[in-house]
Image (cartoon, rainbow, N blue to C red; front, side):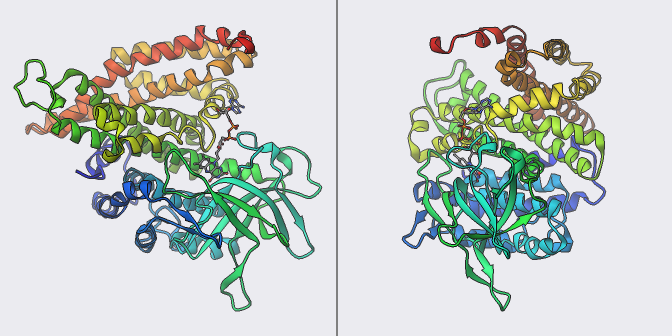
Amino acid sequence: MPYKSPLQDTKFVLENLLSPHTDLDISTIDAVLSEAGKLADNHLAPLNHFGDKNNPILRQDNEVQTPEGFKTVFSKIAEGGWIGVASEGEYDGMGLPGRMSAAINEYWHGANMSFALCSLLTQGLIDAFTLVGTDEEKRTYLPKFNSGVWTGTMNLTEPQSGTDLATIKTKARFDGENWRIQGQKIYITYGEHDMSENIIHLVLARTEGAPEGIKGISTFIIPKYLKDDDGNYTIRNDLKCISIEHKMGIKASPTAVMSYGENEGAIGYMLGEEGRGIEYMFIMMNRARFDVGLQGMAISEAARQKALEYANTRIQGIPINKKKGTPIIGHGDVKRLLLCMRSLTEAMRALILVSAEIMEKAHSGNNDCKMKEGFLIPIIKGWSTELAQEVTSNGVQIHGGMGFIEETGAAQYMRDARILPIYEGTNAIQANDFMFRKTLKDNGITAQNFIKEMYSECADNKEMIDVINLASETLNFILENRDDQEMLSCVSFDYLMGFGYLVGGWLMHKANLKAQEKLSTNPKDDPFLRGKILSSEFYDLHILPRIQTHFRIVMKGANVIKLSNDSLI
Ligand SMILES: Cc1cc2nc3c(=O)[nH]c(=O)nc-3n(C[C@H](O)[C@H](O)[C@H](O)COP(=O)(O)OP(=O)(O)OC[C@H]3O[C@@H](n4cnc5c(N)ncnc54)[C@H](O)[C@@H]3O)c2cc1C
């Protein structure tokens, strides 16, 4: 059975864990989800394995040919208006709330993550132009992005400048009329491809005479094609793709080395103000990091579906107390793996959609939600992408030897998922952000508020109360040791993971209560709701204990790292 967009699961979270949105009724939610689901299942998913085997090709003329079928499906998605799903109607967007965009994006990434990266990046540019573009820039770019006629890329990374963007060397000089950009960017996702008429690159570069470090960096809009005298975009800018990478996963998405300004200098237009490039990137980063966490959840769901199907069909051994011929799902350990995949995926989905609502409110000016958004983003990115490693690996395990063989597609999910903890700020950066900026910078107030909210909502769940108390103790430890930043940096990852599991546990507990409430008013035995309760009970007993490990490591495990001599490692 191929990938199927999990509409019922999405609706369960939207209807039970979020407050209703004034502009959304149930019939709109149903219609949008089911249309998007059909596109994902019928058009994107069938190209997933094919694209993994038939990778993009860099031609002699420096143009990139995407796998057969990608271009046609991209037009379908674009014509349906799906790229601009949350963009304003004024610029031809659908104008739907962020929660709907998040819900739909799960289906695109679950069906075909390599393909969906192109629209993910274009949505990032939609956000960038909406936030810092001039009215003219909005009029020029947003309708083109929303309709998918043009797509966008983010160009931050250079060979010497990955995590630390302060060392960027790409130069921008003003020639009296235009900004001219020169430099090389690496690992640029969809930096070159044949799915849109024009590609708009957002490029970080250092202006002439600007100060060293991040203050000297500005953001430039660099189109592949520039406008001619007739107003058409036909003039080739001075930029090209000089190679594409051979990768472990997401092989169907072209990852380009881009060269800017080998001749007269690529023409670029400064976005916003000079010297504020990194600041703008940080504004966009919340969205981008949210999307990468979402990718982790989406690919976990896809891996889970594949494993479940295999477990229901493969016959091997007679499970204890079962009849001969019972498929492997009858074995206790296979059930454990499947339940683990399910409960982790459901916890991630709940976190992502609940956070989408918080982000909607944050963007309309709610300060409390702004703090919550900032706090949750590193958890969404870091925790969900770590879980995606475990879930996709469990998927391989359930397939036994066949999991290691490429034909089944289980291995592809695991390979594709491996990039997630790396790009958009490695998980080390998420962990440090969570420890230092999101916890210590506000004296632990947001963390404390979350702890209080969880405490009051989980009063009847002893497992949760135990770990919430431990979270409180851990937070106090961190606040007491705030001056020893080196020590805290050695355990920031465990702090992030512990908190991730905690927030996941809280949302799974709420889902459990809602499912029980619905079952009590519905005398029919509903396997869907029973499944939700089972998944939440599994989370309580098998996943919550991990929090103890992570938080104990925070309180006890730092010095063995801090005081270790590099030569002994
Ligand atoms: C497939 C793919 C697609 C990508 N797409 C894009 C794109 O579209 N646009 C773009 O600009 N970039 C893109 N990137 C680049 C990506 O964002 C970087 O690879 C990533 O930020 C890490 O940088 P780096 O590779 O230089 O690793 P490094 O920065 O060299 O990091 C190496 C290791 O050191 C650790 N480390 C580094 N600094 C710290 C620190 N301060 N604290 C703790 N640990 C640290 C890291 O966590 C990591 O484990 C892509 C990369 C890949 C592989």
